[in-house]
Image (cartoon, rainbow, N blue to C red; front, top):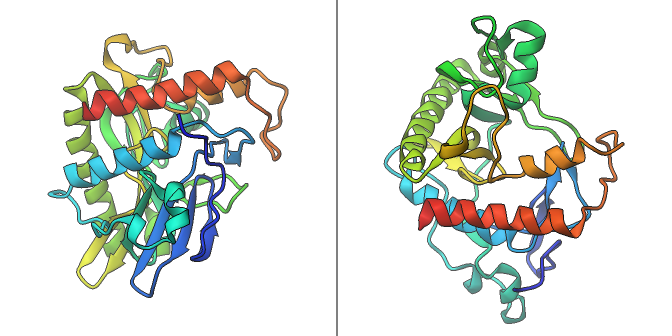
Length: 291
């Protein structure tokens, strides 16, 4: 196994180092998006990378971008990342980078929820609603929602927490027409993906997308239906009323919840067995979904 990559060091201009991805400028029309092995939880980047994680994220994103191309245009270019970096830098980008179109992202995240879990569950327990969607009383955790919910969020800066918002607030930020297009495209992507994944034994409980806008309309960007942006549950273990085992970083979140940590930087170190099991879960999600 290759050594985990926590941080890249390329000769291209570094534009942004996010929680997981490092973003470099290639030229005025193209960007290099590199998925490192960093892991964030509760919006804090943890000190220990997860071996192979960046390659899983990149491979799955490419798979889903191609799988959903009939539903939404995306930012892939097909250019080989090895062609845009120096020869001695190719190992840093091998199987973990994408050359994408250079577009300005919308300042919101588009979340689709099919099940009552995570921050949606917390909102429901407190208010009986999720991002303005009033739900029937008495629903158990992880229950199937009566309808798929579109629950946007503001995009947080590094170290801050995303904030769930309702559709009206999103419309104020991006405009009502664009907000409506994002909502419809998000729900269409989610329906397409959940039908495919269910046939391979995985429930996609929820997921988030990011979009940009060009002269022709919406463009799906960043990542797509990965264990970092989605909750993947094994369908044969799903039971409403309990939080199912998952193929995503919820496993790490559950471990961190047992610690005396205030969810502020710096994040705690992870035991070797947690790192190994997390790596295995990411790889299993990839293998189940792509074969």
